[in-house]
Length: 345
Ligand code: TYD
Image (cartoon, rainbow, N blue to C red):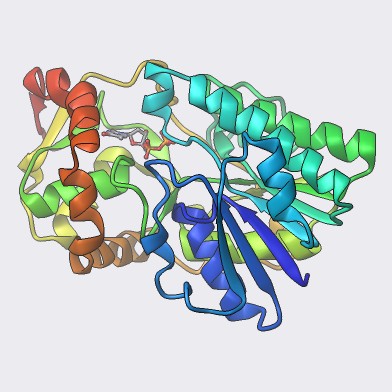
């Protein structure tokens, strides 16, 4: 890999991946192509912006001509560009179809026309729909997406598979679990709970809070992604999971404990519509390539809490901005008004 085109590199996982590549591959160059929607933030890359091997191009994956122009001269492609918040997809899925389906198509088409040898597309465990420890999903299992977000990601995955089969392209798909770590947008559960807890405000936990998610530290995830870009088999998908499964109520309590705040900041609010109870994957295929997670649940949460506590200047402007406050009111206003108090369980 000489020059890698990273779509969506200004987001949470994309920016961590760019930092990782520039650190670990001294002769690699990176083109970061990002639309800078509300979820993209160049401050996530402040520490590498002066690196001569790094270049930023503003553009959307939905603009096929812009993708093709920015991708010229690159020999590897990684696609992180996505609308990723399930709750927003419940309100309106239009942008999800544009970015997560049409956007994937234009990235694949541009890569094909440029003769790019390696394409890594970053998907999600949510394409499989709900699963449990005793009924874990393998890469070839059926897709049963239940949210508009998950459905749009499943469609993008299928396009990758189709381009690998039809055009013989070197496309690899990664399906990571829920990520935690620095620079995640405060709309997502973990940073939302942390930033609310720091402010001494209620933490809105959906339903009974007993839904289960894995918590994969983003630094572990980007190590897996670079491995898959370089050594994943063309046409194959790979699950990425840390086996750090916990309920949301456990996560909320762990955050409050790390900040020395009382558990009664937790509020039970009306559940998310179509809320998936649990995700669980079999990741033996990735293990066989030599990857293993290094963060357990406690360390992943503690490190994330520490980062948000020490980097208020990064997230405070976002949560104070009118756009976020409007979103927050729409998503949580009525829910918090009818919330139930915390009960130990
Ligand atoms: P989220 O971070 O939105 O990730 P995903 O839905 O893709 O898994 O949510 C993680 C879990 O936390 C999920 O079960 C929904 C729950 N959740 C809450 O309980 N309250 C909240 O305010 C949010 C945003 C999520």
